[in-house]
Length: 93
Image (tube, rainbow, N blue to C red; front, top):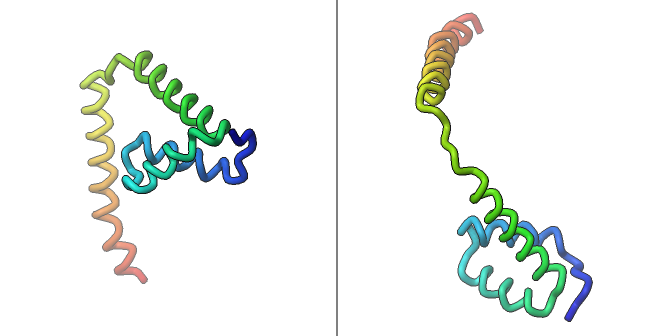
């Protein structure tokens, strides 16, 4: 088994894409076949899985609905101001 991975940063990005369900089936199959022969890739995969599992178990509360409504209202206000002021700026140019 390899103890060094010459492209470990690329492998870690691929691991994240696989776990986020963004990798193609070919990429995932190629990585899974490779990780059995590469210790850093296998450990990186196991670490990422453990981190995601720990975060998921700790993040059980949700955002209060009042806070979400307040944020949405502020974003809507800002977007409205932007939509109003862009034509004015364009008119002066």
